[in-house]
Image (cartoon, rainbow, N blue to C red; front, top):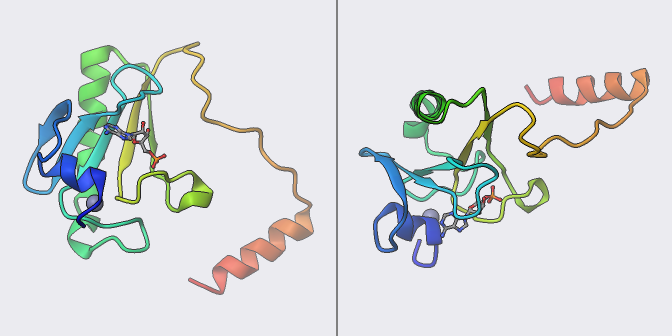
Length: 136
Ligand code: AMP
Ligand code: ZN
């Protein structure tokens, strides 16, 4: 992808604060971190989101999440870790190159990621269960 900033970072055309790289991924520090140590896992080969992800990544994404989360826990004494991955503008994806946020967390760190939950009736829950099941 010619105009993709994360392709350029992943392939070293643009410098980054890289903490890890292998054949498939570059892991960088987010430029506007939710907390110090906030990492982004970038596949080197362009893919947009979970709907487009190529099969080679399916078996290895969880492994790299665990590797980076464990390193952040040890390096920064993180008491918790958030792993987030946004798909589509409606879900808050601002860069259209698949990426996984790995965010170190500490008690009372005032990071706000969780919004208040919506209230649904039991009929609404049931209708949604039926709709999702029909697609599986
Ligand atoms: P998302 O909203 O899930 O698409 O996340 C995009 C993330 O990329 C944001 O947290 C940005 O701060 C981060 N970001 C954007 N440009 C850069 C860059 N050049 N280097 C590092 N992180 C970036
Ligand atoms: Zn890209």
